[in-house]
Length: 313
Image 1 (cartoon, helix red, strand yellow):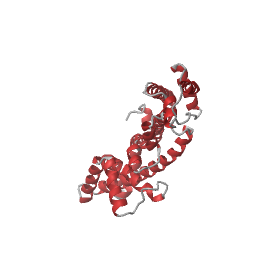
Image 2 (tube, rainbow, N blue to C red):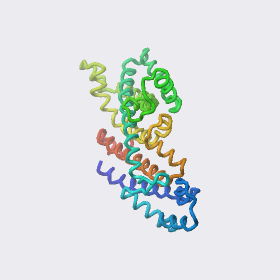
Image 3 (tube, rainbow, N blue to C red):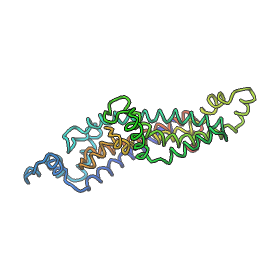
Image 4 (cartoon, rainbow, N blue to C red):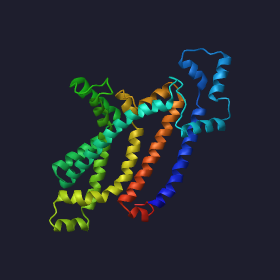
């Protein structure tokens, strides 16, 4: 594990530096002068002198390398500048929006894990039976349904017709249920099939035959022996899914008017609010590489054979 940490930390830093450089470069070459956007968003027609003064204040008259270094220094100190549209500190905006996205993603991940393991175990214990076929059908449908379509169907049925959930108050406790289900159902379909396949493979091994010979029930074998054996193989996949979930809430947040990072990114693109967009991309990259780094470490703790094989399964 220590060897993995020593090897991966420099890689993580290099990936982050490359991501910040690419992000800054793409926004630097994007059309539109940030100083003009600043005045335009406030309905001000600036004079030439005022425009030059604002460009100098923003450091836009500096060479690219100087601008990148100043921006990167601010990012390291958790200071991503101010929004061109609202004038608020970007760090404060991100902090507020991240809390909402984290709440939504945490509930979606919890639902996904509980449903996936439960359905996979039930399908494995009833392989070839009606329950197995019903769960296979659910998994296929879950993987096949696009997020936007599923979200709209949930709104139509549970908000418009049945009126069980509110849509206009994102801070109400019940309002998080439908967007979380929209995120969780496709992932549940994918994970159920993956976990069931791994359980079926483990159930053919000799230690399972020995446990049956000792009189253990099928439930006990799966819960006490099989699940601990497959957790190491699932950890990396789970980490990847968590990262994709946190970064992939853009469509769902837009459909449900959820004030999270995804909707903030859409707003910043619409209004060409480059400081906010830069901060969003950097945060997503940081979350993605960090979660995968942690997942690799946890996988090695759960399955020490991965350390001996250099992380290869």
